[in-house]
Amino acid sequence: MARFAIRRQHRGPLDYAGRWSLRLWVAGVMLFLYLPLASLVLFSFNNAKRTIRWEGFTLDWYAKMAGDDALISAFANSLTIAAISTLLSVVLGAMAAIALWRFRFPGKGAFDGVITLPIVVPEICMGVAMMVFFGTIAPWPRDLVWPFDLGAITIAHVTFSFPFVTVVVRARLASFNREMEEAARDLGASELRALRDVLLPHIRPALVSGALLAFTLSLDDFVITFFTAGPNTVTFPVKVYSMVRFSVTPEVNAASSVLMAITIALTLIGVRLQGTAIARTESP
Amino acid sequence: MTTAMTGGSRAAFWTVFAAPAVWMGLFFVVPLSVIWAYSFGRTVGLTQVAVTGTLANYTRLFDPVYLLIFAKSLVFAAATTAICLVIGFPYALVMTFASARGKILLLLAIMLPFWTNLLVRTYALMAVMRSEGWVNQGLGLVGLGPFAMLHTNFAVVTGLVYVHLPFIVLPLFATLDRLDRSLIEASLDLGAGHLRTIFQIVIPVVWPGILSAVLLCFIPALGSYLTPDLLGGPDSQMIASVIERQFKRANDWPFGAALSFMLMYLTLAAMAWRALAERRAAQAR
Image (cartoon, rainbow over all chains, first blue to last red; front, side, top):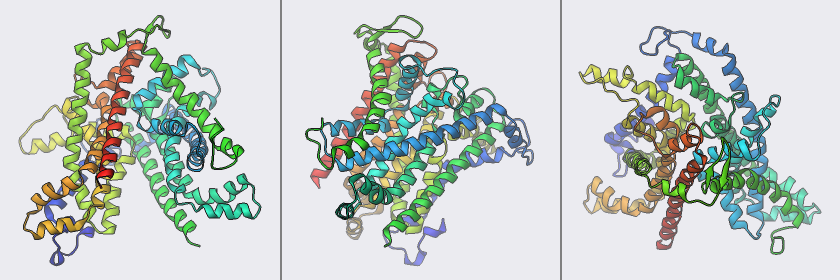
């Protein structure tokens, strides 16, 4: 915390970051944010069945988790759904972003609005809509082999993820120099070829960060999945939810810690990748 | 449709437009339209709804039981937003005036929990607030408690604050960072204290930004499902819990649909208000 404090002697009137009252406030916020998470991780190593008091270090709960078939298959389901949904979200999201950035067409405002809606519509509303849609309007066949039985959940995940990709890609497109594309066209490239060879390299960093965003959104989603999942298509968060509801053991802490580690690692990689990718495309 | 399309060839347009448009239509517009239609219907079987055009589901919303739940959800969301604002404003202020490196660290510190799974964060809070949890042990050391915190309205609001803090800090930081610092310097030079400067100069100048941040926090808080479900008691239900019950246990889809659309209308009204406030702020500038 001392890093962002300028030395006391040189404190200017605007140095709010150096005032002890405000630094105390920030420390309090940190405590509020991190104490629960730290205690969750800590007690996943606790050698006791009830999570009340520290009884010594153990990895038993992680071992127990690794041997829990239902939990592992839920985890496999989550990763499969996230992978497929990310792929589709990036393709659809980039397409929508290019359509909105490049073309003027009748109904553009409506299309823009509909694309943005999944970001603001309460999750519960989308969850029940998906439940009714896949329950009665277009019933997803029940007894498909894995991974096709995950189709309904995957479709729901793509629907709420790809608008986020569109937002990210559109922001990146704003910095594209149209003259580059015109040069490619003058040199004889077809319109689609110019899109592929000139536009796509420019938006690649946005595609990477959009993909990571879509992946974490899918991996993290509970509410919408909860309404779309059947008894045989349980995802990791849905499984953890039922564990939290019905049996609070340190195994839940272990599972939560693993999920936490995965999303944080992915996001940090994403932040770093995006930084280097943009640096590479900006340098001549 | 294609008559007034400009910006490139028709083939290129349809290549990029067709797939997302069809996907959105089929898997977003259709499901929501079905729910909307169901809100004017009546249950006739286990999963069958006859759309009769009745307004009975909407009149049922005015039953005091449901009005109370709507009111309670609004109060919870408003309290959450107010507490987030009080906690988040000084944090955003420190972030604004920190060094470049400090800014990144503070940003990361507030974003890391945000990237963590909602369920995991809620579960972490449950463990801390249990009657044997750390908070009660800490209070026990100074001779207080133990208090029953979990499964109360207090736990719900704490959980909502915990989850929604980044929603208010990030937009607040974005507006404070654009603030003209010479205004603060002028105020301090003219003899005003720091608190007076903040309340009479900073807050009025960044007011549109604060309003926008407040709504960005209020909107998701209003529709929360998981937090009241896990942290709340029997009397801390919010709208989303009631919607879930109609679609699952109570099996009254039309009424659940009407409730969903009321929540959606509230959300969209808040969004529209925010857009209007931003446009007005842009004009005033």
